[in-house]
Length: 251
Image 1: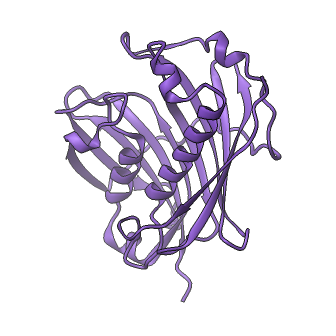
Image 2: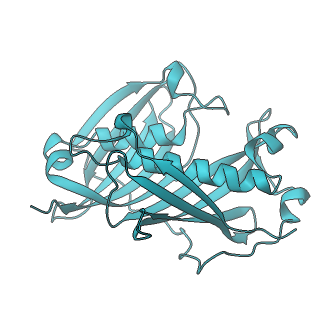
């Protein structure tokens, strides 16, 4: 069986916008994951198909670039496709369009397969390998390589993992990690700048009842790049590493 691109349409809701009336990045990432779910379901390799076999999809990395943000009640289309395969790493790309078919943003992602009982990563099973990867569009450059380590912590917060932070895999949903990373930035950055790019790596899972420490510091001297680290307060294990790039708001 060959893979094929998917297309899903969403309307930006009032609880998914910021004070400027624009969709937040965690909301847009949620749209992309919904589009991916729909695309994999049509090929018989969705989260539910894997769970029936004691397996699940795990997002390992995502690199996102936004050119413009949609606003409240805007209808957007997310196109997604399997873009490649490297050993146990499965790549998937996304592009977001508005109603005029103008490109708003794009992303590339890396996925792994996990045994839900052993909580261990496994080799890609044959029923997934049997799906031939046929990219629907020119693939984006794969998200790979190391991110700079956070050296100078300027801001930090502790976040308890609560019931509504948990997803179908019984661990913290990845959009919540992204939200916690962004929430740790100072107010002047969130109010006066716009998020342009994110490169986020998910390294380990955290569970209900744990506490996550979200730390952030400068990535460059010009104040447009920040480095993020989320870790378990209980054992210090690094959960997430990220780099965000910001641009000045247009008047």
